[in-house]
Amino acid sequence: MPLLTHSLQCDVLVAGGGAAGVPCALAAARCGAKVILCQDRSVLGGNASSEVRMHIVGANGTGRFDRGRELETEAREGGIIEEIRLENAVRNPQRSASMFDLILYDLCRREPNLTLLLNTTVTGASVSERRIVSAIAARQSTEDRFEIQAKVFIDCTGDGRLGAEAGASFMEGRESREQFQESLAVKIADRKRLGSTILLQARKHAQPMPFVAPHWARQFSQDGLKLRLYATPGEEEPTHEYGYWWAEWGGTLDTIKDNETIRDELLSIALGIWDHVKNGPPEGCSTIDPFDASHWALDWIGFLPGKRESRRFVGQHVLTEQDIMTSRKFDDAIAYGGWSLDLHPPEGVDLADEEPCVQTSVPFLYDIPLRCCVSGDVSNLMFAGRNISATHVAFSSTRVMATCAVVGQGIGTAAAYAVAHGVPVDELTHISAAINAIQQRLLRDDAFLIGRLSEGQNDAARTARITAFSHLPGGEPAHVITGITRSVHGPHGVPVTRRTPGLHRWMSDPAQGLPAWIKLEWPQPIAVHEVQLVFDTGLHRHLTLSHHDGYTSRMQWGQPQPETVSDYTLDVRIDGEWTTAIEVTSNYQRLRRHTLELDNPIDGLRVQVTKTNGVDHARIVEIRVLTVDSVW
Image (cartoon, rainbow, N blue to C red; front, side):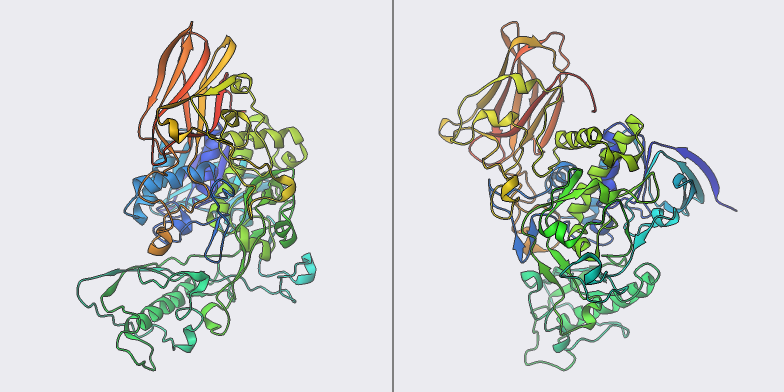
């Protein structure tokens, strides 16, 4: 029986539900667009899902380079990916990979403007005059076929399937040093790319646990793993519970067309490494249990390769090594990055004498422009994730998942703006008012854009007289309306010319104790629609679901972040009388929005903090008092 065809319509189609696609779809939907999200797997999250289990990293770095410093360099990403991380840290203390799948699914299910199509693969596109008319998708599990019409199409598939079907130009492999004048590029261009990895998890038992490798598993000598298992790549502590990112292979092949072959060989490699850990090298060694692994047993092994690289689209700008290393300022920035230029030998474990990665630290956080995410030849195609318009060298930084997530939020927001205002997406980058509106909405949604301040549109807090119960030196109450929501003036933050030193938050005096309040007053009563609060969530720290115990020990996992306000009230003053309009307990999120359904205007607003999640004083980064209900 042939597949049954269904016709669907939406404003924005997002293909791919990974680290870029989920924030992209949520951002577009929350900005008012009707969104369909097609994900080819049964779970969301891509390389971070339970099928692959790679931890989400980003601009704050890890391993050999960590740029976080408290109240000085707060590099961890904000916005939707921060919402997800905070949710995961509290609701998933057990660090369950499947629980993370559920959290992403729950977020999408809760969004009324978002239609989620799981197990649905985009397989084709109908194009007319450089414009995608519809995408074709198939769901084999129900024998259904979908023709999806949309105004904007966004490729978050990683492999670039939608864009490739639409005929969009793309790059593969490594560019030559001369082509983009990149010092880290190879001398002669080739089609090699970063390889893929299959991860595994193990668990310690009370009794010895034998392991017999299948006959097809590779055998590794000590010399073959001397720069990997017998070293500490990325300066990670040796571990049995989770590994091994460096078990990489397949970069000399076509990581799309040869993915099945790559999967088979990666299984052979992963099991061969585990055999080496459990039973020692084939040539023997002086100790019976060289890795103290006798009580450890495999608990899980992936069957879906964690893919690093395949297609990269050609957009209106190609991001380069120089753009990143100089932290070039882009007027159309919609996201930022900061991970190192992280190049791996395409041959992976086959090159035993080469380090598994060469990481060149990026001096500062850097802009990612909208132009890198808009197709240069398909007028209504955008992209987010590892397939954005970047050279192989630049991609080695932008590819990490937290960076993919903030790009996804930026592109989802831009797509929603284009739909709402009837602007073709390929013209957005030429309209300064459109770029500004998109950036202002991102800032309102707690995204961070280097050097860009919130203008406070429809924000009555900007005209208020602000006082507080107490404050620390440098933590004055006026910080909550400056439009700056983090400190990045410290080491490896942003370039000197783009710095604004300071704490950039109200911090009450611990000596005065809690409760502590901050108050906004107006000379004349105002009508208020919504109060928006941004709290401190320790953005200098790492926070991500990881199955690596050593990495997790550097986080505040399984609990709210200690800097965050837990219990608070919103009090309003009407005709000289204070009343409590909103009461919140057990908060752990950074961004909170409260709609005030009041019959009368107010001339005073007070946020009273009665409890935090750890620190001995109140911290509030931003307060907005919105007078109208407006997306833009």
